[in-house]
Length: 356
Image (cartoon, rainbow, N blue to C red):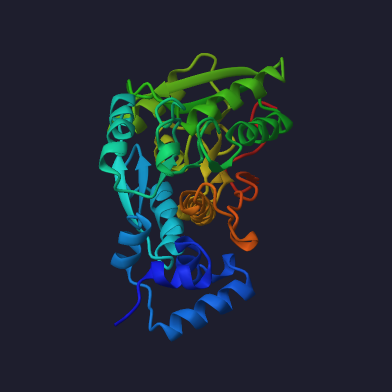
């Protein structure tokens, strides 16, 4: 009869999580421990099965991904693909939860301790209230953030510096000679949550203050089907008229770039445009934009998630009053808070204003 994971762990003198990692993430187990576990598993005719590991370890082998928008968007689809590239080979499924406002976010974290149906939570692009996730610590459920506005309440985060990115954009436009610079963003639509894109507006305003001669024109519009029309109208009617505009994301900048020419604005001589994200069409259309790599963010966050889950499983497996083997001590998350640099991609939509 095939042995179970607990028997292998007992024979090897290690925890259940170490046995699981030996098969799913051998890079996290020392060569000596890995060899010992594999030999014992072979002698006992043991093989890792999802259901057996779940029953013995208390794990669901499921990770929750919280997002405020659907997966089909450019950013979210790449985040999901990056997460899946690491979590799927490690034996984990990803369950997506779309939370549109703070009430839905609160409900999720209130119900999670009752459901106990995920091993970790990944939050995509919005903040959390540390008090909402306080109960998850006792459940050994880590919370990982991707492009979140703050590290508060998270066991680990992987982000870019949105504020610094906008400083780069504004400084570039000022160096070209622009004096009236606009920013086109989106409102939160009453969600009462703080998003990473809010930091872009803050960075824009801070950067403009660094240049007293600059007149900022902030234009915020609802995220709906009329967004592009509203953005174009805002740019055309702003007083004083901006000679350059920074956009919250490329998916807003590109339609404006295409359509505003119909109103007699030549790009970039009449109006310089800078986007944010560097989606696939940005390079093809020559859009100057701020580049980020959401696939890399997702994959890196997935590795942090696995590290955090392994750490929590080791803590759960440790028995009070019993010596834990030296090589099986709970390991801390290495470099838990990562900020990736962002790059300005200079293309065809920025230039010295015509008035100079």
